[in-house]
Length: 278
Image 1 (tube, rainbow, N blue to C red):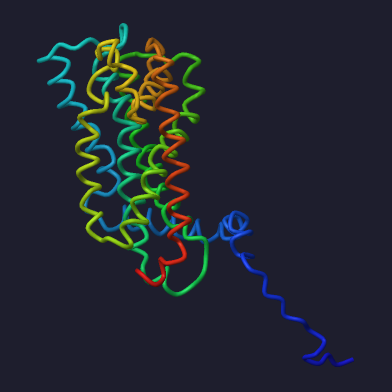
Image 2: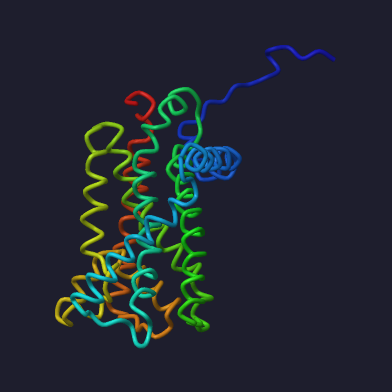
């Protein structure tokens, strides 16, 4: 039996794409994998030193901070932990955060051709760039393991909670990145803000020193920096002797969740106009 055109009914439902947006993120998971693998391959195949760059940058920064804060300023470490381990345990989440923030914030403009041609949830693009930062994190973590062997430092049971703080570092970087990348589509000069944020944040975050050196009366205010809670958590996982300042940790997580909500909200609000503006 042949079907005629009258046998079919076309239904246009307002807001259908919006209603299924989060389900579409799962449906387009293969696109996420393709974009993530492309970013990883480009990152390591088109560089002279390749994977070694993920080791050289944090290791060189660790040496500088250890000399300045540990030897010159003579700031205390966490318990009996070597100062180099203290610094590198802070460098790991900071490098993950800064790389994810930088790459995700410029991701939409870098994928302008894809954005303007086909439909897919645009949230996939900045989220996929975080995979590169995670690969860098894993490479740097291998160097941390070697340092722990060198210093004969054995972590405690807290190391099992490390994936939780990696996830928190991802959330801390994704929220601001979504907000800035959506603004960057409309105002291209926002791309110049990211290097400033990363450079400024490195010095105001407890990367080269323990957050315990901050005076007690200012510590809660200082913890409004969302990276503070993540770095303290990493050191607690790796060094074991570090004590988390729980009021400050709660404040850091509160700020992280706020920026994650705000970033997603602003991104979704501007997403419809990306193809026209880009």
